[in-house]
Image (cartoon, rainbow, N blue to C red):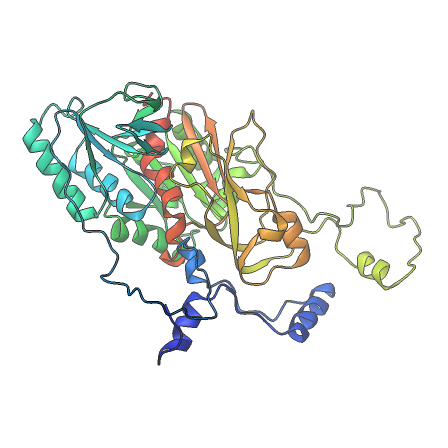
Length: 446
């Protein structure tokens, strides 16, 4: 797309990866931070559309004009799937495949998901591929199921490939334990106090409007009732004092529900609640500021004398004891993917999250669960917006999405809200893995 047009400034604004700020302005913000003053920054700094949609943009500063001219729009024509006596495959990883799965589950079709790579008829199908088999849907004959699958393909825009063989030349086959049933989940979304209304609204909009899957809002104070047993998935959006609203009875009720096979998806403040020592649903911990002043455990009002040799020593001395990391002002951060868990299926090179606040978590150990996605190395971490130096160092390689078993159930934590303002199209696949595929990986289903 060229910027040499009347709307060129708009094109540049939409596609640029960063809007730099003046060095003098940033120096003043660093001075304010050193004194504990609030930085004079807008709440969200990262608004790179390519990063939000997980699309690579390659800038070009010159136009080459050759003899060949481009003809057509370059978009391949949509093709309906062919008939099959065995079944169909849907490659996973984009919005269209997510719409197909949501529609198929709502329609009552039995769908499976492959957690490992398959190769059929010389084509490789990556992790997450959906499988619709005639054998799993005995209520339909081959013609009826073909018509239904074709209709779902047309409505969703997903690529659907007919297969007449279940033999995998490389990787897993249809009968493998790595090909899991994906039952239609009954999803509850925590609503009202203490949820952040934007986060709850974003999440409902993404599932119901973008993917056509129903969600039932449930007031947080009602989670302590038996109503929770009607659901397979509970989403805790960003929020405040969940523990206070739920109370001891509600927390125990929630933990019991997960333990019996429920899937808890906790985002931002919801993850902070799930990971707190008082709740213990996620085995991770918030970090203090790396390199910050140690907390003083001595009793009394007399402390050990110190010598402040220079300005830097003074700045260190006036830091609060055991401070939290400085808050991130809404920046886009890149992640890497752990390829050994189903939660990252459909994602190969990581996705970008909009990160606000100061919640940095330690990575889960191998005996605690999986860090399905974790933040990039310092030099490649930022994808849009300004990062403080200590943020860049401390957030690197820390978890972005974690999963842990809890009894027969699962707890999935998103450090940042994956449905932020319904604009993080690139993160949708991970969110859908959690809510639409999660119940297929609980001990209750297995």
